[in-house]
Length: 119
Length: 119
DNA sequence: CCTCTATGTTGACGTTCATCAAATCAGGTG
DNA sequence: CACCTGATTTGATGAACGTCAACATAGAGG
Image (cartoon, rainbow over all chains, first blue to last red; front, side, top):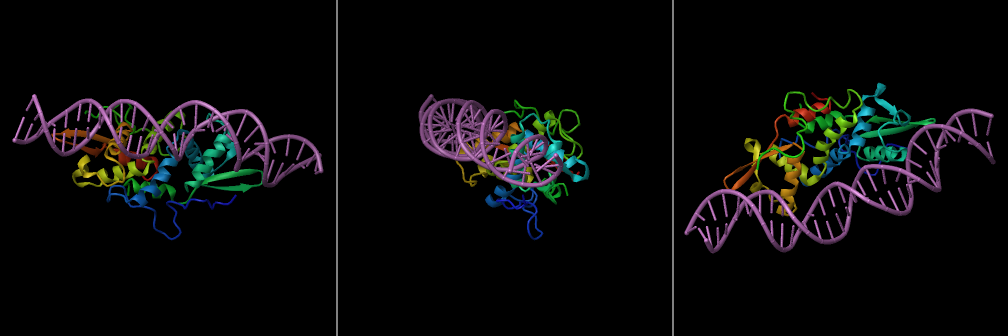
């Protein structure tokens, strides 16, 4: 269970440049839109947004799947959504013994915040 | 063609309180997630994200539909996506004579930026 | 090895979505 | 009025999505 997924990370690029300039700076190209939309889409489902918020707000910045059992869907569905968030580059996962811990990928929040113009 | 749509505005509430606290503050409730996910979902399509960026970055903060003809989809599809963005509370539209102008709804950018933590 | 618990994967089903062509609506102009 | 251009709506179609039950995998501990 590594953090390497099929889809390239969107904000946390290899070098330093985040994926895209602020949405207000200039019209997005097709490629930029494709990359950025993948992240917005991942947060565009209520269940996934709750999962992301739950991880992002959890103590020490990480949450175990076992902490998540009350979002209104079955456990396989939770796993499915966590995978989507991982593939979108928003979360990373790590197995420690029995449990699997998820945390927000580095610079995702600042990177996406930048798209929306706030600083 | 008023700006009043079926769905309630997400960020630009009537009073002053934006829809939701930062994603990192505490786990979102089902209702908060439903509201915020609607906006993220609207930006989760590459074509819609290009349209939004095109409007947001256009001079004087508004763009005519006639300015938009090179996003790779047919004109009815453009209209369809603009409607989705309007229903999500991200854009407003106004007809002036022959043409229809779209602009970013007030406080959408700052409101969504707040969700992502970068005030 | 076997068993138990914690996660992830597979397959199926119904729903939603993006897209286009065709029809329709709205405003301007002759 | 008729006609033209800009924009939206309608209807249809194929793809993507969310969900669950059932099955599979992983680690811990007898």
